[in-house]
Length: 357
Image 1 (cartoon, helix red, strand yellow):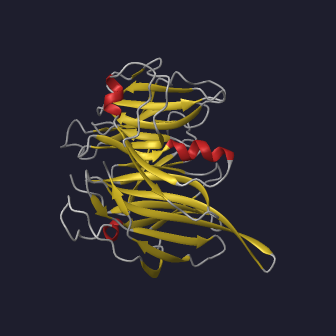
Image 2: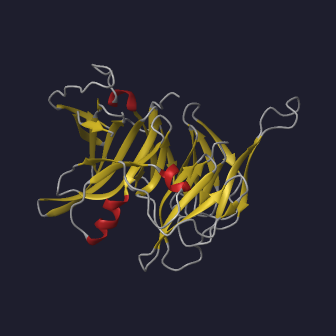
Image 3: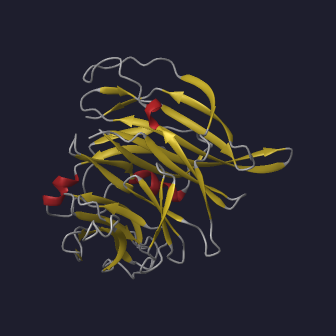
């Protein structure tokens, strides 16, 4: 399995009313190892340099119906509007394909593909609408060389419609079951399972939540699921400073166990940030071969000449997991102000250790 070279970063440019796509080359985040895996590597001093975000490769205009939502389908981007319209963009060919309209519009959708490559999209709001994006191959290649994409409605999850229900995390188990963890306004937690082959939901799989915030990614090299720990997102509701925790858990063991014990965290790595930075959200993107890009989004305020400016920042960290060894990774910080039309920024490269036990 090869690792992905580029990470797609879509930034909402409110001044132009566009969504700008930037392609981050992750190869520089993973320099060749000085020693083989299994030997602790020596870290050099942090290297600092000036830099800038890469220029946008393309931009997408918002519609009058509201903001756009973006979903990754293998190496392509699907963007959907609030009225259910959908388009597919191929960043390699710089080509756009029109997709059929969704069976129902989605708000803050979550998406995950099974082992067959079928994409499942669940509404992240209160509607609970659920559907899949399927590619139909042509029945006769002599008449038609291109297949077609089709949205198919699926049964809604059993936790909707329930007032105050929030989707906290999700993961693909055994390549065919999607686990979705929710909490309610009463702070009760539950995990539900959807069979992507039989297309049915379980009433409830467990009375606990996955120990992650957002998507958990399976790494076959370690037979573990990696992601952002749920601890920061839950504690952050009360305010204060909370660092991001990148962790791993054995969800396969939890799938065969019975009882009310939630899956434990097998590994923890804390990513520290400045105390005056307000952490908005964090995501872990699996690149393959045990490599991750951890993206953290921050918001800070500065005052200059009596005028208060909002500063939005994104921190991208390259993380390579290794069992029983330390590996060298790089972290690059991009900081851009909403008042900076040129999009200039400063970049800092660091060399932290990530140890998986």
